[in-house]
Image (cartoon, rainbow, N blue to C red; front, side):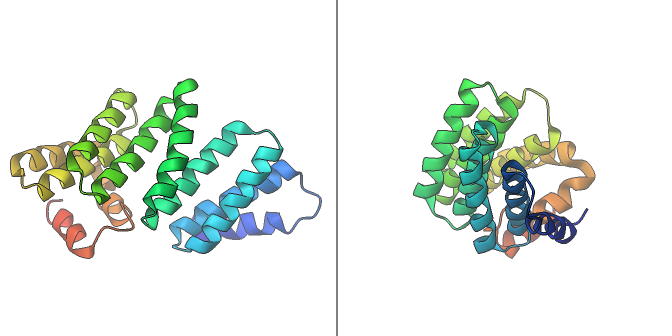
Length: 201
């Protein structure tokens, strides 16, 4: 299903008066997620914050944390490092306490993004390695994304051989999804950088 179609369905659900508050929260969550992918940032964060508030009232802490994670991602999209970092640290604590390894690996990518944006490429690489370790051979697409970050770090720091090695692993893990992954990889990736990666596919 396309994001536009999914957005319409979630928005329609919000128009129903007699839905439960939990269903309403999940509809707001869905609208927020779709809006982020459609580059409608203001709507995305508004709906996710409403979802977060409703999940908190309903004592749905698991869903609250996942939504908080997504709000942090939105702030990071706008390069609001401190706001994103604060949310991510709360989320990370929950993931650690509940041994949510996949979610924690996804969060490692966001910490890697922060480090990359701040030009701390060593720390970015460390976060990528931590995420890869948490995956423990599972979830090839996410591991592939982390190897793209590693390749990008090495390219920026002019470690050509290391960049090439990381890129080869990413290609192997992502396969036919590689080009699509690059297209949607990071909202702050320049077209020039995308072209650099496209040439290596």
